[in-house]
Length: 293
Image (cartoon, rainbow, N blue to C red; front, side, top):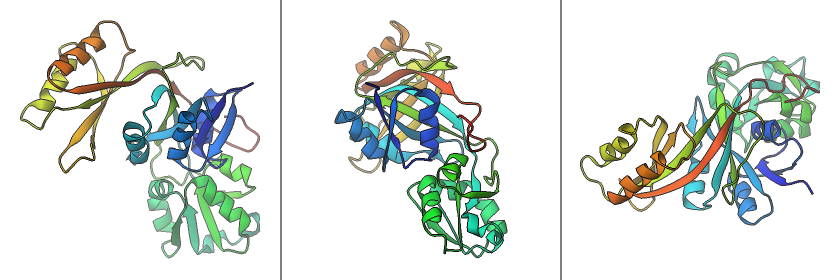
């Protein structure tokens, strides 16, 4: 039987694009929320979950990060980065009148990514937020009587039979989103050639004292380990209490990273290795109906 993969649905989301890029034979199942995807793995309804974790324009997906580090202690076994292209889509009945639309539906991030386009072309249109870009496309399909449009990707447009009337309405052309592949346990996940390996650590300081963060960073610096990302998140135990998420550009080894962990633990830090995993970059996504991701 094929392995099951949970992804943030419904069908037609960028997350489905990311999942299809690395899972060719597995059974893909959409779930309505990011927590639902993670819970599916913990309940063994699925072997993997694919969820967004960071967008180049809007930053980290805090729900993914907080739920991953506070609720569902899963392991990151892979990463997929895909380019984000947002389009303006309408019901086929509205192809000739789309310039007079009254409302635009989409996910908050898609609206934010297309802010300038929408402000310039539809300054009086109402903005209505949905759980995903695909949900916006589904709404437009189900309500042909409404003078409305959706912002979303080509996959959603094809899935729900919409007409793309304006392509690439996003404000920044270098927009990409990172998705993580989650599993209950570490596994040697492979989906073809990858660009690099990455290891993610979660570090909690023993207390807030001068130089604490400097000591943490020094453990990486003197070993010449490149940190590609460092971010603080609240521990949810009180104001001013944070833990740090650090990505390093190397695979978990037997010397350097265990040395970092031991040094930080000697300083009283709590250190968890969240995953050591291959990173995949998708160059081309769906451009027209019938094309493969």
